[in-house]
Amino acid sequence: MARRPQEQPKPTRTRGHLRLVESGSEVGSCNTRPTLTFSTPAPSPQAARGDAGVDTVSYAFRPGGRKGDAIIDALRTRPGRPGPASSHVLKDRLPGDGRVVVFPGVVAVETRLGALLTGSEDEHGLWDASALAEGAGRAGHAVSELLEVTGLCPVRASPGRWARDARGGLGGVELRRLDLAAELRFADGRDGLALLDALGGMYAPRCKTVMWRKGAEPQTVYWVTEKSRRIKHRAYDKGVEAGTHAPGERVRVELQHRPPKSRRRRPDAFTRDELAALYGGALDGWAHTDRPTLRGEPEHVMAALLDRVDREQMTRRKARMLIGTLVELRLAGQGSMSDWAYGYAKRELRDAGVVLDRPVVEREVPVSRHLAELRGRFAA
Image (cartoon, rainbow, N blue to C red; front, side, top):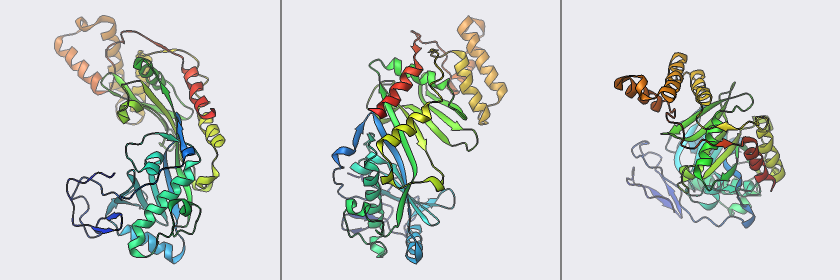
């Protein structure tokens, strides 16, 4: 069920089960986002996956001809805000908090696949490749309902039939983004945190690594491509993000696949084996790093700091100062500097996301074995 906004920007119109924001209402007058509210049928039983599958997707619809131009113009009149590449991001949200972004000639729907299929923002699961076409149908059907009041894209069929009918009003559909992920569960959360720390000291081919922490605990590692500066991989504490597990007990590693326009494919063109090959191939470059890594070692901390230098978030001089201070404090302790200097150094290290204290129990991390387990999740 969609959340009720605490404030209403202006009186809204309701058509059937669709909640619409008046096009003339002032955007930004309310922090909450309006959502299309309608009953969502249960997804197909074979769509659910488990510890490996599809997370976030972005569907691109290409309405053609004069009617397509009218559809684009109608959506651009909806309340929203400017986005990248001359796009318009609608304030209306689809079931599961899906976002509609209107580009010149393209209508994109960006959402977690499971949230779209179930209609729940709280759905964080991973879904089978067979659910991609079903998700496209539901996304197109929801956008069509948004346009129904204009008469440009009337809803004539269920989401299932809509998915099989490219003439539903929005034209053909293709995948512009496909996030594949697999999860590892740890009975002892310290093992999961140690893995995140170890991954923060590794490099994927042609990528830079950036690590973020909350206090002393690692939460997210990003691998950013050197040329395009786009995120290619992400490893993060999914249990903390979703509020389902204690820190370190549920770790997710994902590939963010964004094919160029010439290589985009229809949602129903992907098979489970293809997704497994795509995900496993992306991890192959990591598997050659077969050394155990100790959590919190200075060389791994320096790797994260140098990434921030490369991203112009920190000067090289400050990175050297931080790593030198970290080593000094670990070797000599607080007694090596005045109370004021110690307090200042501790604040600087904490603000940079650097762990000051060594873990009580150092843990060796078999990185290659964990990467093999992730690939095996898709092959199962």
